[in-house]
Length: 247
Image (cartoon, rainbow, N blue to C red):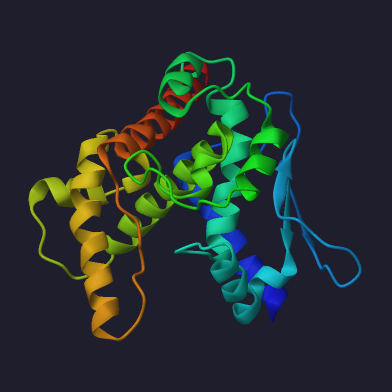
């Protein structure tokens, strides 16, 4: 059962990537790969290294995942969220590192050359868990610019994937909205995406509350976070355009 849940989340991630037109290999040709491991013998840490994404099978257990969410004070923790976050690290190397987006990245997200391990150790050692919610989509995003990018990338996938699902619902929408929903994954106008996403996310949350459930999207997109999402959108679009011209 746990393995099936993992595979369902992974399939949805791969669907996202196919719709976005993103490759499953690095510039060097190294293929994207997944290790789904059980920590019955040794502790397994979810993470990414050189195209290999490792996930702990225990995260597919609802009780275990909820316990970890509470322990880490997270408003949201899902299998699909893990996959979308970790893939963000893989695509930072492809979309940002060594490209014209590296300087804007440094300006908006911060200096990624700072010691990563020291930053993560410092993050988990914090006693004060408050953070600037205007500047970051989540608390974990404050740990290091790479993690901020991965969190932002994951949220961009949340947005386009949910809008893609919206396209199949029997709703009355204006012409511009219908145009965006033709293919949210390939929408060139970032503002058009957010114009649909903002009322949709609030509506989903209101519906969940009506059923006595937690918010489906417990996040606020501040102007600073909007800028970060926009950079992710531009980097993906630019890469896709380059691939089309090279074909």
